[in-house]
Image (cartoon, rainbow, N blue to C red; front, side, top):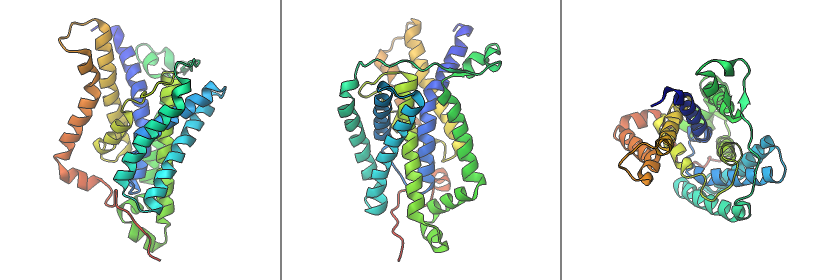
Length: 310
């Protein structure tokens, strides 16, 4: 392979991994609070169409991103109402949310298909972007790439170094003990779920406004499910989420470069396109074989309903 392609591959990997980082980081916070929300795919889709509609209507890219976050947050609060207030099964409600969100986005996005949208230029960091080889790959990226780095660092600090983060983790480990101490368990879980939804919406907004400035039905393309798998792959740790996201992003990008390079590979293009999802399944199977690791790292009350005693 031509060495001159390496910076392009690295840059493309960073961009491809960014929505996974954002969505998986939000889901990680929700799961550390003990809530399992499987609706990331639907929240991303709704956030993507809402952000695109806002941008198409004349809003700035950042206003469109905030619109996507609000849409994802609204979907997450619907999930919270079902599971935290009405005590519905979290797995069933999450799957329903994913299906509902994908369908809802397809319905409202029908009129935006093939609609033009101006591409958002990358944010070039002076001096650093001029560093040979590394600069163009790392420091001439969409702004949300840098936001995702700050997001991971902020969540890692919040969970490991701050008192509110410790409280959130306590709620995820033993909600009854946290309630006995006087913490509002349901309110904390609502806040974590809303944050996770906002991040899913932001991930969707990145796809439709910053990454590929267009709306097409199914453009999320399973990234929500990959983000859910990333949380388990990362054993609920933020920095490992970033590593895993770039690994999966590299798999996504590599199959595109292989298909566009003209290399003669005796495999149908559909097999190459399926590589990211095959990798996701393989990783989950490998991780699931070591149940002790999952039990040791996952929140003790993950997915379990809790109703405070009066």
